[in-house]
Length: 260
Image (cartoon, helix red, strand yellow):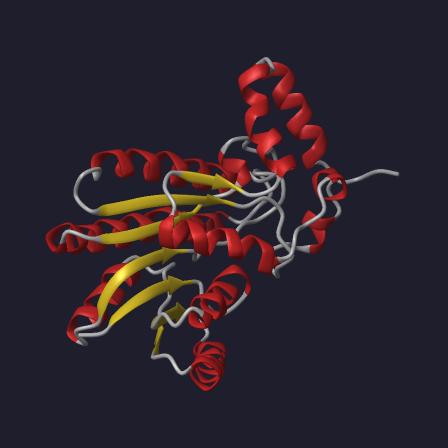
């Protein structure tokens, strides 16, 4: 039975680039996202260029049973998932009292609930098999939750805490759980409003290719968490040395719209 790496959120950005870099290394892939057309285009490109096996499964992980249905589909097709990349996720920028509650609940479903469901179901299979690797994509805001990103920051803080605790529980089972913590990356994730913040003026986005090279290494051979980039590493450690009140003032300032 052939083995596969499952990537959620594979149609664009980090997920699509991760698919390309893993295909280059000759790994077979299961590509998951809502956009079937984009996934099919990516599949065709990867098969043609790298002669791998690629499977497309459209799935909306913002739906309550989306993650369970995805798992059931893979089991029914007897696809052997040895690596899982929980990359699907999205964010929103704005004042909490003004942003869409419906969108935020969908964000929690994708960024947290579906990630937990997929991690649990595949980790159970991997423990039975005595081997497997799961990489959850968190964020630099897992360490420094920002005002105006209230729900997104909170979901990514959860992802980091969840991943680190599960990693500890699974030590000795052959299953490794890691966490990738990107800062700003040049992808469609960033809205025009996000791009006008002080944070993105001070810390320019890195290329998605550079970020994914680090992520692929973490997925295949790494352990623990990885913060990519010196500025991001420094930012992630600031809460350890600065008082909470001062830290929040700094975070609010850098998350505010940039004023010349």
